[in-house]
Image (cartoon, rainbow, N blue to C red; front, side, top):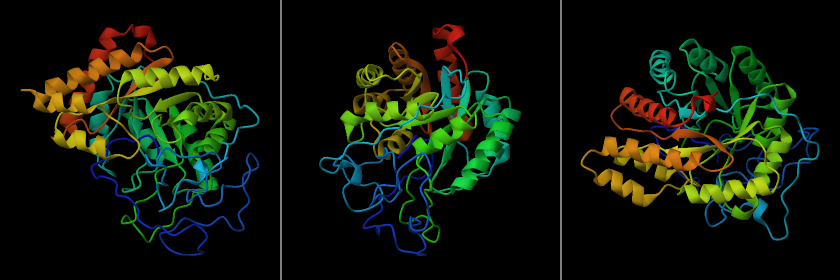
Amino acid sequence: MDIHVARTTQPSARPNADPPGRDGTLGQVVPAVDRPAPADSTAPVAGCPKRMVFGPCGGVRSAGGCEMADHPCVFLGPGRTLPEWREPQRPGELRPPLVLTDLSVPAGDAATLTATARLLAPTCDAMLVGDHQDRPDFPPTQLAGLIAAAGGRPWVTLACRDRNRIVLEQELRGLQLAGAAAVLCVTGDGRAFDVRPDVTQVFDLDGTRLTALAAAMGVPAGVAETPTAPPVDARPARLVQKQRAGAAVAVLNHVSDPASVGRFVAATRGQGLTIPVIAAVAVFTDARSAAVLDALPGLEIDRDVVAAVLAAPDPVTAGIEAAVAEARSLLAIDGVHGVNLSGLASDRGVRFAAEVQAEIGRRIREEVPHARAGG
C-alpha cells in the first residue's frame, strides 16, 4: 500500500490468493527462486507476496491481514523485529514543495494531462502522478516530460510491482534526464484479483531498496508511509529506516485528524527523523470523491468533516474550506513542511476537479510565507 493519487475505480480485495512460489502461473507474484537478493539486503521474508525485505507495506489490513493474500501479514509474527538499514545513504538534494497536488487525469491522454498541468502550475509547487495497479499509463519518464513541458514540477511515483530491477534502474536514469523534481519510491499496491489476471507481478525490490537505488544514482527520492497501518507503533521506526536508505522527503497517507499526524511526526523525530514531511489533505466536494478516499485500505479521513461538507448548502465551497483548514492545521506541526492535496476532488470532471485543487493551492500559498514554497 502506498501513496494514492486519486483514480476513477475503487480497489477490490484479493481473496484467497495463492502463496508465492508457483512457477509460471499467470496473474501470480513472480517467485523468488533462482533470483539472488540485492547486495544491500537479506533475502525477502518468506510468505510475503510482495517479496519485501523492508516491510511491512502500508496495505496491512486493520486486523493485521495481508493486502494480497488470505493470511496474516508475515511481518507481524510473534517475536519478529523489523529489519534495519545498515549503512546510511546520503539523499539527493530536494527542496520540499509547500503544495504538492495529485495530478489525476485519464491514463494515456496527453492533451488532458497538459491542460490540467497548465491549470495547476500557477498555484501548486509540484504535481504528483501515481502508478496505479488497475490502469497502465505513459512511462514515468514521459509523464515527467509532459508535466515539465506544461510548466509544472513533476513528482513521479515509481512502483516495483510491474518492473524488475533493471527496468527500475532505467526509469531512474530517464527520470533524472527528464528533470523530475523527485521520484516517489514505493513497493506498489498489489494488483486486485480481478484486474489483468494474465499479468505477472514482479517485486524485485521493495520501496526502501528502491529508495537506496535512487539515492545511489543521485536521484531525489521521496518515500510513503501510512501511520495508521499495523503495526502502528513500528511505523515511525520504519520511516526512519527509509531515511537511512536515502530518502530525502516523506509523504504521509491520510490520517483522520491533524493531532494524530502531530503525534506520529513527533514520534519519528524522537527516533531520529530529520527529513521534511509532507502530510495528506483530503480533497473532496461531493459524495463520490469522498467515497473514493474512504474506500482505500489503510487510509483514514475524518467522517465528521465528510458529513459536514456533504450536508452544506454549497458542498464545493465547504470542501475547499475544509481542505484549507486541514492544511493550515497540518502546516502548524513541527516537522511538516508541505501538504499533498490528495483525492479525486470532484465527480464533475477532470477540469472542474483541477480548478478545485488550484483554488485550494492558491489559498494555502496566500496564508504561508512565499519562502516556504519549493518543489
